[in-house]
Amino acid sequence: MFGELRGEYSQLMGIFELWGAAYNSYEEGDGGIERWGLLFLGDFGDRGNHSLETICLLLALKIQYPQQIHLIRGNHEDRWINNSFGFFEECEFRLNENSSDEYSVFNRMNRLFEYLPLAAIIDNSILCLHGGIGATLKKIDQIEKLTRPLDVVHDVETDKQRLVVDILWSDPTDNDQELGIHENVIRDPQGTGNIVKFGPDIVAEFLAANNLCKIIRAHECVMDGMER
Image (tube, rainbow, N blue to C red; front, side, top):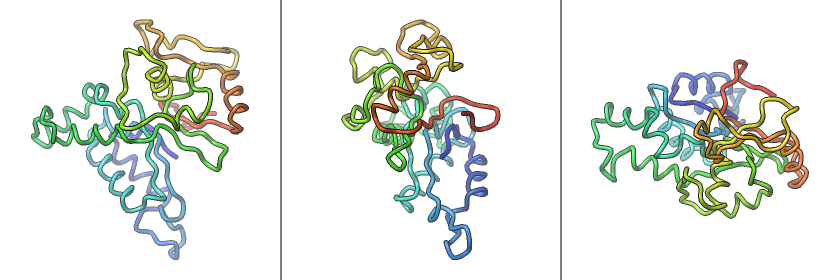
């Protein structure tokens, strides 16, 4: 599973180089996508220079390999965010389109993003999502009850809106000594309280309540590519 592609098409190509490209057959030895299956944890575009190629290839592979390619939503699969962090400008500049047109690529992509799932479960034991469990996600069926298409509301007013923001935006605390729920001052500098950090005790309670063994997430850059 992989997170934070951020429009870096070469990074996506590197993943296929490591794990097998779509055209490798099982008989040739590695099987590529057909054998392994790949889960992408959101944030497919923005910031990088090739969001269009990255997103379009992932979608094409999802069509070709629906049981092997899995895409869940990140906080940048959100019109309000990707309007400000590069995807909007890339669509207008490279496609010479008017993104205010409801049939523009930018708007069609964002309508598609509203249908993406917010989480995935592997082997009934590992929860995969983009951000975290925050303060409000207590049971898996809370995610299952969310209806799509789903708009992300940042000025949180309802429990549903807060749950979505928790899933897409929250982070774990910086160390295991920070328990409970804390303000996330980096992502919420205005102090609205809408974006939080959750401690290891919150994780342990959630895993026990849902009979899971671990959570795998993205949303933060770590120097070694993976951090426990």
